[in-house]
Length: 197
Image 1 (cartoon, rainbow, N blue to C red):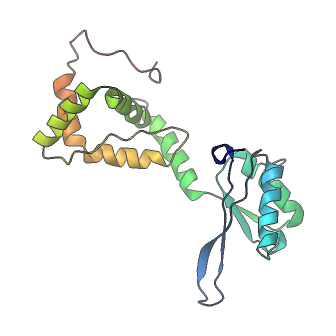
Image 2 (image 1 turned 90 degrees about the vertical axis):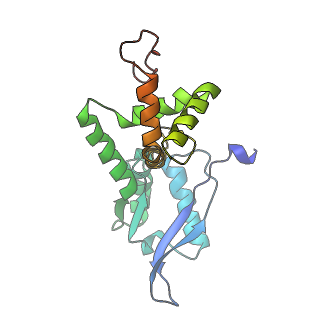
Image 3 (image 1 turned 90 degrees about the horizontal axis):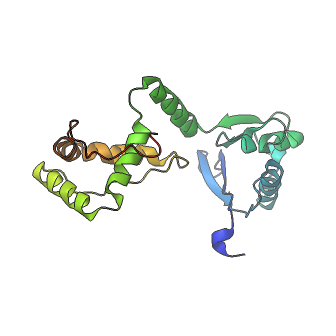
């Protein structure tokens, strides 16, 4: 099996460093887990801990993203870890929780979906050299540093922040481009994207 086909599972541990006495996070292992079931991931995690001279019984908490394969009560990784340590605590990923909360809060606005806007913005410029050139002119005219529009993929939730930040940095030029290019009365406006329909 080629490297591109392998699915890796990075294992990090947070512990007290014996030399400094400080709490630190260290890389422990990165086993291959091609079938990402709760049982397989838990087995790989236990093997990594054992290889590092540790045991699940020594673990105070387990942290991961909030997918059911990781946190599920019946067949999630956490359920298998609790078989070896009933006192282990689940700590959901705070970044993932924040992203989910922001997305849910954003949906409450209903009038504007930031994620859809970021995706549509990327695809508006993606295959058009003419549009990219026009945007460049508007950015230069507005004294904005010329940078690429970043692509956001909804399943890669961490990319949204970078895409929004980049869009905000380009905003004056983008705003000028949008206002001068799109007239609400024109009939030649592009149809909505597949995500908007």
